[in-house]
Length: 271
Image (cartoon, rainbow, N blue to C red; front, side, top):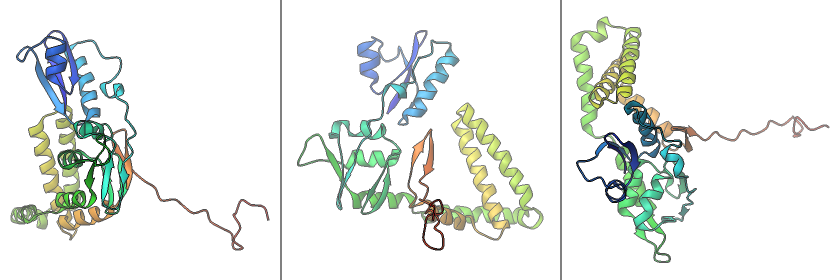
């Protein structure tokens, strides 16, 4: 976890260890500083630090926090049974966080280092019997964990039906139209953007919820349940590979074969 701390009148900084960095090194005890934000995402916390330094009028760091810690280009050794990481247990989570977004292939498919996956690995990893500076997890166990994250239980499906029942009762399906619903979706998206800029968690939840309601109704107006749309989208992305670039997942593009002429020669080759 990365902590964004504030020493009033002095500075705003980031650390993974408040006691060591703020108390032992700088001499400020609890109550003499405050934690403004925290996150496992080093990129988010780095941007937030600069933003708040500007907002409070403090000196801006020359280099962002995430630029001080270069990714280690961690190589994961995957066998049929296990995935082994080049780090001891006491340093494993830090290394995983510094390589967030990394994908690796196993016999159970492609895994990605997300926040939830990192937490699971850190809790379930074992020290390698061959090297104390390496740790591992079982691929099947990680696969089963990922499955439980994506399976929907009956409660949200019931909630979607409750939304449809409400919309039916209000006459949205009989008297409304998809164009109005789409405009409503854009309106809610604008409210979400504003909530994100203000970092207002309550408004973020409200805006996302409103967008889900609108999408549920829009799907129903086009003769399909939103559950079907979600399932269809997930089936497309579940085996997709790629990497994180500037905070966005960029999927791997398939290799396109160069067309050949009728006689089998490359079109750029001279006959």
